[in-house]
Length: 342
Image 1 (spheres, rainbow, N blue to C red):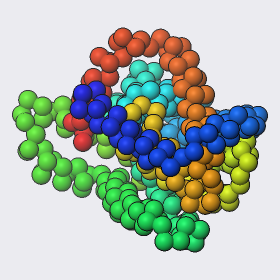
Image 2: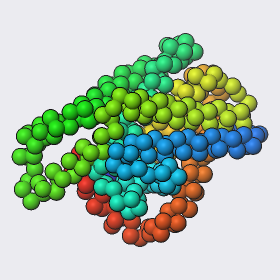
Image 3: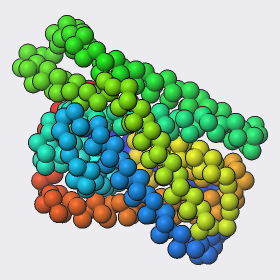
Image 4: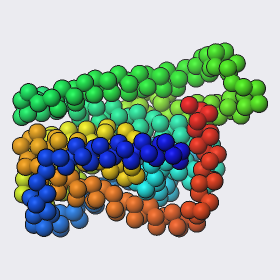
């Protein structure tokens, strides 16, 4: 991790923590934490792991053109990836699970990363759908709040970015020979000679990872699965809400889910510190939830999303005989491969 990236992440998290806590009554937040009914975390964590299993199935489905891997074998790799995202900056978990898959199934890293990128694009589309679908309701409860305007602007920009990315991948998948011909004609000559052969091989391998998008049925299945995954995550938000003395509509939690997960794409300290919490508190206060109560709920929700999956990921990490001391060196080639692909 380059020092400037680490410093940037810490700085962004610090700013978001300040934004989250500047108007919060910490005494009320502490009181809410003391009186919460934490038994509601049991079904919340259970439904979250169902969502993670659904993610493993989706990845299994995307990888089928390359290799048929049982979902039960994909699940530990997905969990390890979550753990990597939670304790490393810069979403290193995505590289980690591509590396683990190569280690276990001998699949090219570039091809695996192509399916990971597809997942993230579909996730982004669904998250933006959650936000856009619920913007009128948020506007109604928060009046002239500038917060609404900021979300609307971000949603429009995000929609354009993810739509363009999705269109590019779909065109590349539907017209692989033509798109690769364009790459060979315009991009390949720009690659320095000593690296050209290796980079071209990576790009071709990446293109094979897009094969699952060549069927409209496959596209529909991936999209539907993505919606199910994020609805299950919202159900977790709903269960955790019952541990506290407030209630907002399920659609409000969908909006919160969409906004906080889009915000966590920003650089931050490991575990999305601040970038998860500030927007979550802001959405709840816009719906009339007292600031201290919103802060305590968001803190517990964040911990419930972070701790169980990280603990299980560490267990699978050890079970795969991976070593922290060697991991940085082993992932260096994966990072270089991703950088060359981009």
